[in-house]
Length: 262
Image (cartoon, rainbow, N blue to C red; front, side, top):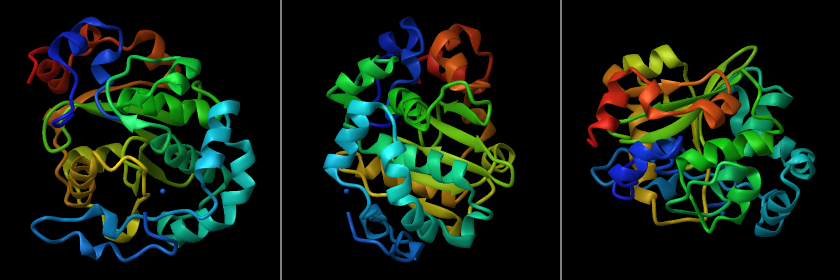
């Protein structure tokens, strides 16, 4: 992760803590995404805010551990925001995207080693290693093989964790730390294939301390700045990550970077 990354000691000594290093804006409808082309881009200019979400509704998800009460309320608005740009948007896509947005608004960014839902919801700060698990909890399961946690170390996004949703029709990259959703797959992401702006949505989050990092992630996805040497891990499920994720088990360029403290 960028300026707020975890220490070398934490990344190398605690189970899955090495991934725990970074984890509501303008009104709907969203503004065009071509505003992020200046020398100093402003992510807030393209952020989408959902009217169906409020501080109260997010606190309700914190208490219940579920987005069930939000799914019906947000369904139409979220389908409108994603539109046909994201292909055949079914109920499961709506649910994982909504879980991503809610997770991104759960807490401010900061150091946390929480893995269980109870630990996460009680944490004052969260980061990417927490928020990817949180998105799974809110979605309803950590066991789905459609939701693949993926980690990087190096390049424009630094030490960071995201999710790939392997849908029936489309693959979607999800970032429950920054609130970004993009239609791309693993091969294109690591090959550095740019993603068209109409295939990306940036959802507003309450924490404004990581705006620079959010901009970096957006531009890295849009401009195809991910590289194979950044790749650290992918797990079959979030449950596998939570129980078996460990830096010493990964033999990848990103893991070498992370172990060396780069």
